[in-house]
Length: 433
Image (cartoon, rainbow, N blue to C red; front, side, top):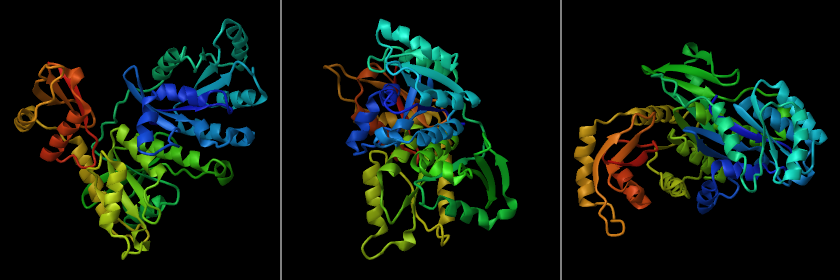
């Protein structure tokens, strides 16, 4: 299912404030620098040793004053289908409204975990008033003040209890997702891949009736393509198309090992492409960038090299990425794309012997030691790969807390120089010897 937690509720009950608390304010600061201002819709959270993605449904509805109830209802239904835990938010100061009751009915009928969060219960009188919300019938009811943050810790504890431990399903068959904005050509690519060898495709229903893992056996290689494009009654989706497609992308990213991110050559890199990329990066997934519709671009004015440069600038600092220019309709270079995805999968699953790591890295570290901290020399004695499902390395040293980000980047570059980690985010940790 992927660990997706969605915050639902009517407008102005404080969903975004809670969202910012759950993902930690850090995210909004980081993304402002890259010029993504609308990216307040989803982010990653880490609590009690578990990682999960949090989605703020409020971020998808512009000018919330004149929102139709029907749009919110359909949004809650989409969230029920896609998320594993739902936080249903209500507001003490307004009491239970008709829409609250209606949403409560929809949520109670779902078989998903629902936590009721009663917001703005920030003084004694309001706490007394908040008791009426027990009548909505959710045994997990939490009282909080998203302004001061009281109550959010307990809420997070309850959320993480309901999330499966991040056990990657150990399978030797790589799982690829094809993600990107609506109309970028995801289904054309899937069909182009399918069309060739339709006879050996075996459909295996994924974790829900909506996510189909299609198994390919080609060129002696095996892989699954995760297709989350469930067939929907169009009426339900059209007013929430953006929300729907983002939920789908998040689900697909969560379920895969390598994300094949498609970008429209005629549109260039857009904010939503960047958001999808950052999420895949934060979830430590392998990444391949496909520039689709390359056949439609005026080659005189735009060269592939210019476009590749633009992509790498926008996606910096992580830009050790494979980039392929394809046309899904013309079936140009689509197998190249799959070959690269398989390579990235290999890069992501490689295990490097400790002796080899130390032999190659300690030399560079001696030549360029970390800057000293308040006159104290920082010494890195030893490095080893951690047993995680993506490449992560522990550097043992005397002052682990005082190694700066620049030096972390230096170490990452050294790792990339000596080993092939193209398309793969790397984790670097400093530990006390």
